[in-house]
Length: 443
Image (tube, rainbow, N blue to C red):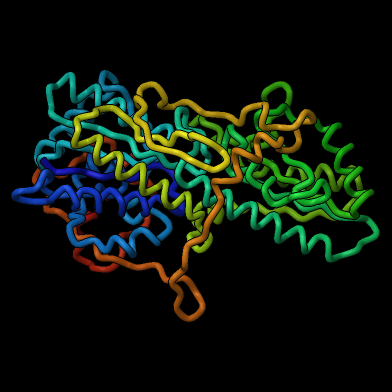
């Protein structure tokens, strides 16, 4: 059988480390004649690449360079997988492609929605009697996958955000102004506040930034926020605030979000700016606002070493699960102790955790709802530990650009779900022949 790897959802600073580890583990089991695996293929742009039969042969991929590169080398996508009864032709196409390339193992590297794809394909394969083992490799900077103590990608994003908050606090403390000033940092995370929580690691004393953290898990209280911000401004002359993008008012409405066209899913962004305008307008202080946005998930120059190790570990375990026939499972991280930090990898059924969101526990948040508790800090602290050497040239990090040898298509070009297949995506690197191959495959 051949093994297929695919990336899905927002990328992280360590998703390619998972890709490299999965390919390395497969090579160790043996490829080709005499090995347990025929070939390792990678889908271009996740499940959309499977539909379009757009595959990369990973036999010659430079794994060391891959593991140190941010973004998703093979391309990712966001695709809401329908049930088979809603889109039978789509499932027929998927299994036609899998059969044409003798794919018996699928490793899907993604977050909550991606684990739903694992569960759906697992069920569909069993119903058909098709010999496919689908396994999930978790990743998300949001850190919100149920059953997974921490998610690969989160530790590195947390390290970047906490570092940024610590550094900006030095800038804030350097200036003296009559009105005082606030700095607001908005973090990603949608409905959960793990990334906002991580900025708490920047401070060690009560007067250290961030002075206030606003979580989606705690209803936004404007009066309490303004009162605390005024106290901090009076005492220090400045106040640093972290705002999770998905904060909500007591009635459940988001502080700022929007929808696009027929897509009724909320798109968050701008809550931090809203808070900056509110506090500066009421308290009469200067304001500064920043949204790290993609910076927090792509900062490969400041990766958490433990995060990198865990990203590799879940991928290696996933390859083992595939070869052991552990269908529909996700390789998750289990915490064994905080101090010393110990963990292992355990399987969790994708169907049990798909599309769920793990929120920051209330006991991780202080009683006033605006800071991390000691229990929360104990949880976070081990996840940002350790640094990795960065290969630089001319003063900047080097990211290896690799050729992606495309596998010849065996089926007719896919024309269904065209609206999904033209989802905006970057061109693959280098050779025109590969650009043409992707174009002919509908990508």
